[in-house]
Length: 186
Picture (cartoon, rainbow, N blue to C red):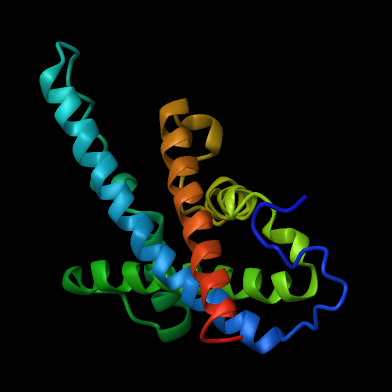
């Protein structure tokens, strides 16, 4: 029973891993953009709700380094370690976006590749994939590399926001991947 791919139990399916990889990568890139838009909408809605509630404002005393996105921190780390270059203030946002889209495209490519070999990975219409990326990247790799605090140091609301964002990422990746494989890359 596969919600994400009608070929899951088609034993005549011949894997075409390069096409799957390309479709997954494009899906991951599109999904990275959709995820950013979702996060912007979530943040705007949350800000609006906070402004309209009687609850106290959030603590803004955290230093800017801690509030900096993990993608920017990763870009700075790569730039310093590989290029010996400290990113200038005007380079940080662009470099962070490069990391975001590279991660999204690479994750999507791996997913598309895997979907060709084991179509069952598409079960759940991309929700399982999005959850896996959230667990592997946000909850494990980012803290492990010192790009964020440990997951236990964040409130539940932060995890819900990140998981919801990755649901959007996973579903979008699968929808684009599946569409490309059925049409352009068939």
